[in-house]
Image 1 (cartoon, rainbow, N blue to C red):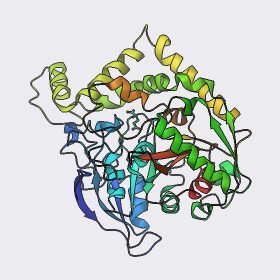
Image 2 (image 1 turned 120 degrees about the horizontal axis):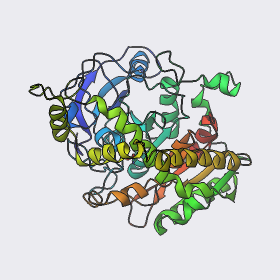
Image 3 (image 1 turned 180 degrees about the horizontal axis):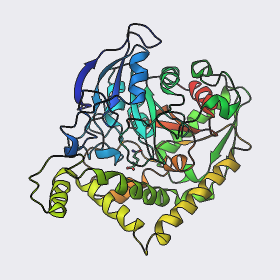
Length: 429
Ligand code: GLN
């Protein structure tokens, strides 16, 4: 298909029975597939073929789904536009000439173009929700620990989750139902039934009943104020729609989110600098001519194999963790993270879900944002706080700006509150 949505097109067959029999799923290229190369959008891994499947891939094929291919992405998940891929940028099928969002841009584009039934993305700071919003489809970032990360090539472990991307909330819920649940190979997974005391916790499909009668929605002022006018108008129109269907809303304050983007980038880059150390041409990466000087060899492989954004982040992350600066940056970011969590808990004590625009801006034109990393980071203002707080969130299509660009509405729930966000989202899409 077009749009450069895939890095590798392939056909991994699924079983003949199960809830997903006869469907096709596109899988982001940082999720391991046995025998099919998995590149993370990086030249460093352009020839890497994993010897095993990620747990989520195993669950998909066990449920009967075929895997249509591995989708294009920002290199190692680092980006908001899917333009940092070593395999070239992806174009947005719902707004041609514009970026699809990132970093799971290939997954969202494959769904938006109608090429597959579902896709998997990963969300460290918005990478499922942002491309879902930009491409006019649905994306869910699950509660931290709901979905196994075994076989996911790590960017920032404490923040990320694999999540579904689909044309409707009901479809996304169905995919989540298949991939969710504890995994003995990922010690950070938790059983949602134990966490909630609800034996039917994994029945996400029935939660997509569009019944918002009596639902209370909190609207964090801070996440609406800074957004573009066209985005804000579309957001309020969607909220009016939810109100007409029986929900009520009130405004809430999340004072800490002002610091969320900074805290997110310090933590994400710090974790990345450590995770990416394994790409050294010895353990992973192209095998150079090792002639005894390991430092030179290591530097040469990384100079060649990593793109500019990845290098920037490894350098900044290493700096933030270094002796003498650790307390000034990393520790402060962890304090901010705790504050963000506390703010969300408070806001969710008298609201079922919190609503905001998913992205403060509509999809940018292709080529516009690469030279300005800071502006790109700031576009993550509404999504990153949710990862810092480990909460679940969904992005559903809210409508379009006057220029016909898709706008997403984000709904955030309490930990293991997947039912609430799915229910509210299904009233819109
Ligand atoms: N845009 C954010 C970043 O670049 C989020 C990416 C992601 O969720 N993988 O870090």
